[in-house]
Image (cartoon, rainbow, N blue to C red):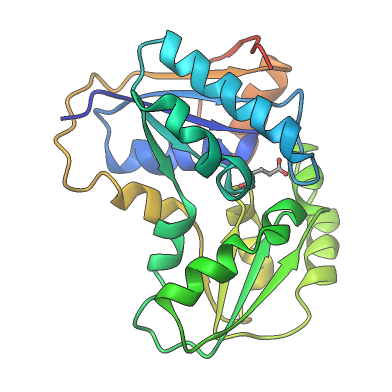
Amino acid sequence: MITTIGCCDSGLGGMLVVKALKEAYPDLNIVFIADQSNVPYGEKSVEDLSRYARAFLDRFRKMGIHEVVIACNTLCANVIGDIQEEYEDLHIFNIIEPTCRQLAGHGYQKINVLATPKTVERHAYQKALGIFCPEAEVHEIPAAKLVPVIEDGCDPLLLKKAVEGYVTEKADAWVLGCTHFPLIRPYLEGKGEIFDSNQAIVDLFKDEQINGEGRVEIYTTKDPDKMKKSIQTLLKCEYDVKAITLDS
Ligand code: DGL
């Protein structure tokens, strides 16, 4: 039985995950923390990423939250495996394997993955897809420019241009290996099947009994008013956003 989950990311990507979870499980309580004073994470050092991950997990622990979705591929690829034994009291969900599992059994020959440079550097998607789609040729594309454009208001022309710089061919399937990237779906149309982490994360809880009151708390380490407006504009939903300081 689950009452509350904690969810964290560098920014708005995690909020897309929260929205998907909320739609699937209206009774679930969700506490989301966006570390927007450090966004983008995609080119940060492993040392920095470890500090950010620990700061999130320490805070959730202090809040008494034991189920934590790391809604950030960059943290999952680089640091979660190494630090999770320090947090044995928490149930930490790494989202990369569940995202890749969705592609199993389709017979895809050519799979392209768009992710942050730091995620690509660890070849986390290549490794996981190698298990679920052993017959596929996997091409990982480091896409550093997309997160800043999304965080900066998601200007459609800028985003389209940035996407076109990375998406130059068709593939059987595209994996959006960054939780910010569902927002680029319109610019990938006609290029192949598209998979992101949202449904995979929703499915993590499909056999659980959810026993909350549907409370959602959203925190940012930067500017709550700006985040509230971005959520209204990009996600078309209304949430209060509060400021938080993390010890990272
Ligand atoms: N949304 C995160 C991810 O899934 C982090 C992106 C970033 O801050 O660069 O990788």
